[in-house]
Image (tube, rainbow, N blue to C red; front, side):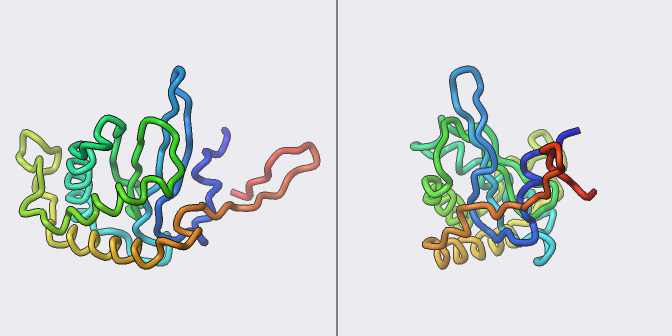
Length: 174
């Protein structure tokens, strides 16, 4: 089985940021998956599950209501490792081009009075939300993005160098 592309990112070197994870062609259209990384993997504590769930609802709602971007948004959802989110957009834009979108979406969390879609008929686990912690993580990420906006490392993945076998295949030790 081939190792998927996201596992070629060196998770010991990645920092929080906005990264292009992959670009796919669907029919004649481009679709881009972005890695919106809030925490440094295997270094920082992961995002609290209830806050992650609230951020999922808040940011998805914000993105899907943004007048400029709503028609491009396909998906917003959490990473299984709880260090960030995936955003899938129509088209193919460099990660720097969505900086403003992401910054504004996380800024919007500060003004939230409630988490949308938290009734039992709207959510699979409506009791697992934490608005105050979501605000904390969002504010932390906004400060980080502003402080590091000029750095390439928050927009470009660090890659893992792999050994190549004599017959040209990549070698994976696990």
